[in-house]
Image 1: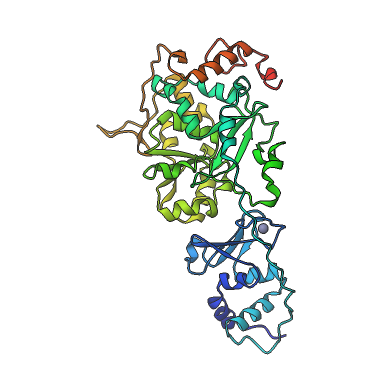
Image 2: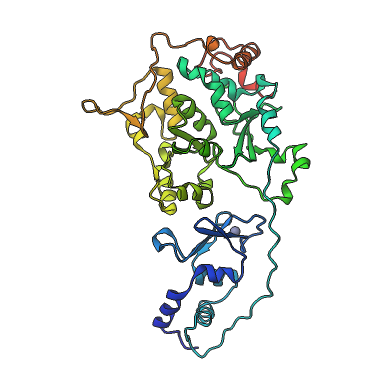
Amino acid sequence: MPKIRDDVVRAVLDRARIEDVVGEFVTLRKAGMNMTGICPFHDDKHDGNFIVRPSTISEKNHGNTYRCFVCDKKGGPVQFLMDAERMTFPDAIRWLGKKYCVEVDDVPLNWTPPPPKPAPPPLPRLELPRSWVKRTMELAVPDKILFLYWFSLLPWSDEQLARIRETLWTYCVGGWRDGRVVFWQIDHDGVPRAAKLMKYMPDGHRDKERHPGWIYNQEGCREACDPDNHEIVKPLFGAHLLKRYPDAVVNIVESEKTALVMANFYGQLDRQLWIACGGLKHLHLDSMQPLIDQGRKVWLWPDKDGVQEWQQVADKLGADNVQVYTRFFDTCWREEDGQKADCADIIIRMMTKGDQPREPEPKNDETVSVAGIDCVPVEWNTDEPFLDPIEYIDPRVREWREILRNKFNFNKRHNGTTDNNPDAGNTSDS
Ligand SMILES: [Zn+2]
């Protein structure tokens, strides 16, 4: 079989448009600048995992490619034909030649089209009852929800202490009957789509033994919302605040806990909003496109050791308004924070020890800023390290604190609880 001439291959490649090629086999739907569909490479139920970046987008921004965020299949038009239709390279070139009227050679296609697969009917997106949000937030077993206790006992300033309740309510943080904390994921339009259930230890660390659960999988909820027959969407944690604060800079961190610590530390959500992606893999075009399209200023805040990885993601997103923010680490990170530290770890260390951020000699009256906000917007008194929060906080938080204090015999505000009470860790599982 004669080799196809290079100039012919090039002519075909120049003409091939990914949206046409994929569109022959997959039903595509427009989503912002992209198109999405059901991934042909894995047993996909949900439209939205498989993204096509049309040929109208520049190559630098990954135009004329496809990618599945579940099975990670990716490539251009030829790769698609080879992977999805099992064509050889020459056959893929011949197929494209036919489609785009480029004469390839006299050798006929050694490929017969498979019978067309009917596109599955689109599933309705899972929408959870708003009453569930309220119910989890009012759950009357605060003594078990150690995350909330840990959070309320951080060495906040008076001002920060006073807004804990507001922060938790603004972000829709609730509790579950078994002591897990519930992080609601509500979309831009205020529709509750998912809620992550996570178990924390009294020291504020996640219980690594237990994987996060999802509210729609919980007994009693599953039957009520039928997740199997819906498309499950997982908005970023805090996404419902984007519309409420249209002028805020959007700071994206990895964990929900970090977003809450930062939000409560700085307050002023109308200027600086804190959003959690729940893991780098959720930071993809589909979740980020609305922010990119709106042209909002987005800072990505990786952990200390995650800068490179997050930078790669930012490069892939290829949007000028989305950038990795490292200045905080440059100025505030210390050896003792460790390589795994994230910005909340550093903030907590600074609050606990009364440290000033190590800004390298700010020049004259140059203000020290973190993404536009003063690095230490509140002062804490190092002589009197532990303010008693009871005077300042919401009655509910006070109630939690009392219950927990009795239950776990806490008598010191922080330093971790296990120092004072070796049983605390065990009791939490009971
Ligand atoms: Zn896939």
